[in-house]
Structures are given as C-alpha cells and as structure tokens.
Length: 487
Image (spheres, helix red, strand yellow):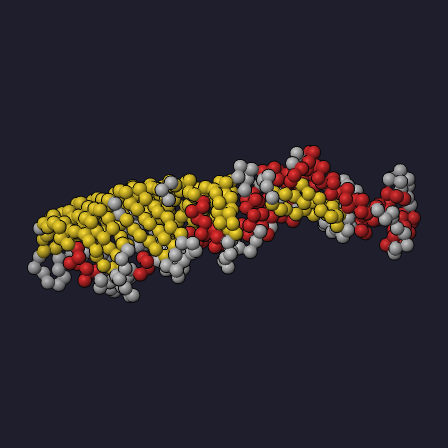
C-alpha cells in the first residue's frame, strides 16, 4: 500500500475524542506492505514500510496560536505488529519542529489543556500475560527544533526562545533492559548556548535516567521578571551559567543545580508580595567573590507527576533561600563560602579579649586572619567593629593591675579579696574613663590588626560606639562584636 498528500484534517474527529486539539494543516505519506489475516478476534497482521508527515500544524481548539508544528517527520523503516501490538522504528527524523508553550495568568500551561479529562494516561485493564503496547526506536534525529516559552503568570510577562535545537536520542523503548542516550545542542534567547545530554532508562518504568543540562552566557536581565517577583529588584546587568544534573527514577526527580552569576547588578526595586524579606544587597555581597562572581550549588527534589512542581521556580526559590540565609546569618555564610574551617557563625562574628586588656585571647588572631581573607575577597563588604567592656570582669582585672602596679608589686590573697568585695559593693571605684578607654582601645586594636597585619582596605572598616555591657565567652574572655554591611 502507498499514499501521498493525505490531508491530516480528515483524522481530526478521531484526534478530538481524546484531546482538545485541532489540525490546521499537514499531510501524510505511506509506502509499505500491509498483511492482515482473516482472524476476527483479535485481528492480527503486520505493516512494513515507511511514513512521512509533512507540514503539520496543531493548535488547541478555539485558539488561533499554534501549539505544535514541524516541517517534516520521517519514520523509516517501520515494523508494526497488530496483535500483540508492537512497533519498531529504525530512524525517526524530525525537521523544524516548533512548540509554543504558554503559562497563563493562573500558572497553568497550555500543554496541560491538551488531553480531555479522563483520557490522559487512561488504559484498559490487562492480564499479566498481555504485555500491552511495545515500542522501540533505534534513533531519533532532531534538526533545527524550536521551543517558544511565554509566562503570563508574572509581571512583566516573561518570554524566551530555545532554538537551533539539533541532536539525537538513541535506544528508546518501554521494554527493559534498555539504555538510551540523548545529546542535543542549541541556543537560548538567541545568544546563550545549550547542551543537553544523558542516559535514559526504560521508558514508563522506574529505571534511573541521568541527565545534564548546561547553559552558558545567559543574559540575566532577561530573567528580570523573576528577580522582581522573588528578589524585589530588577536586574540591570550580568550573565548566568547553569550546570544542572538530574536523576529521574519513575516520576521522582533529584538533582543539583550549579548556578554561576557573573557581574550581577540589581536595578530598581520592585514591589512584590512574593519578594524575600531580607537585605538582598548584603546577601549578594556575601555570595559574590573578588571577581564579581556568585557561585552556588542548589539541590532540589520533587515529583514530576505533581502539577504544582515547576523546576524553574523551585530553583529560583532555592536561590532566594540561600540569599535570605546569607543576609540573616552573614558570618555563617562567610564561613561556609571562604571555607574557614574550625569557626562557626557565632565565632566569626566576634573576637575575644583577655579581661582588662587589649590582648586577644588564645586562638583569636587566627579568626581575624580568616575574616580578613573573606573581606579581601569581597571588597563591597563593610565590617563594623563595636569595641566593648564587661564592667565586672574588666573592672576587676583593671583593679588588680592598679593594685599590683601592672604586676610589679605583690598582692596577698586577703588584700585582693577585700579589694574585690569593695569594688563589687561600689565602695571602691576605678578612674571614670578607665572602662570607656578600654572599650574604645579594643575596637582600635581589631582595626589595627585587620588594617596593618592583613591589609584590609581602610574603607572597608568602620568603628561603632563601644558597648559598656559586653558579654563573656565560655572561657571568661570579653567579646567584641562585628556587623556586616554592603556599600
């Protein structure tokens, strides 16, 4: 049997039994041998040959915008067995496909509107002896594919285009064991490069598929609508590189997303109820290195069968969470980014002094060294130092120094206990400026170490009004607190 230029619109009634689709154009060509036997139930037979669908154009019913179109779809050779149903295709060549994906104001994609209720995924019950429909495709060759994406659920409306999509998919089947491979390259937004590759498990099973999507040179201002919604700012400049590695088991997805932003600069603020409530500029300054690069690894997981699961939005929210964590716990983020081993977030945000002295407690110089490295790597960060004193601990230490003339005189334990009790009772005092001077001197001591020893620029260092009620650490040393800000 053979045929050509068969109008696909003749098949539209059959298509609409299960889908809200209209066929706007396209022709079918067939060439092969059909062999049917006289058996009535079930009907058996085979078809061997080739087929081609040219100029296909499909759209949702009652809509004018094309949903799917292509120039040519060739299938050769085809081996089809009627019962049990089995389809084997050597090569599928798809030339010039175009898919138009639109998310409406409610966040529902037009692809979700294709199937009629109850028809998607519907299948008849079958016995264990009935394997159902079996298919194998040796290779699928893709040439010059294109996907247009529009998101109307966000303001302003986001649009982008994946084009020049070419590559291959090999070893597709729904019967194990099967190991397929995919390799597709293309562009995003007419500038960025896209590379999609991976290993595919048996389709329709819980076999593991591992895939990697790499995109480079993406323009960050194009993502401005999403930054406006979730960050609260427009994007003025910057580039984005993505390395997304996903493992899919059945409908379960687990993955890591390496996000690298180069020279990200925010624009004007945007009013958004979904924006993170955190000092965004500080968070970005903490994440950004000396070269203006932000690099974060964002793990995600979810169920692909869940209509609420959207990979792009999950990744964006994961980045927002990292940003909020950086802004709310800046020293903790500095510690993790700079790999400052041995210091937790509380330790990095303060330094301890011996009571009554401007001498750092044991181990504290190493902390300042680690902190200075983080500051040098992030020149937009500003460190404020709040000198301080603990009135009782520092007061007693200064009193002992006074009584011993700085350690040059002896002091009996009885005399010391008497002096100590008198001081605590308010019957003995120090010079009124003694504690204030010590508090200020400690702030200056920190600044001097950072400035002279570690060469942190002076314009990154600020002094705050000293505290007169500083706390003690677990070793009884007096702590001086730091705070971070951004230019």
